[in-house]
Length: 77
Image (cartoon, rainbow, N blue to C red):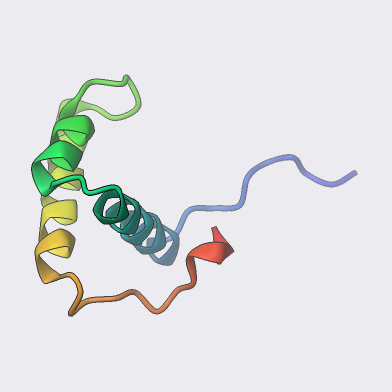
């Protein structure tokens, strides 16, 4: 029987997910502040320290966009 466990999460997958969030937000005309507000909202998925860290990572990626583009195709998600 095939395992129903999801594949492990690695740094490439995380980078691709962050890139997709930024692409979608920019396409929808959302600002970095909009995205950060949503990231920092308590959804019970991450503890406050991890939400803050993720917000900082997204901020850096957003500010580097479009000069930074991950090499992974988002379709691989």
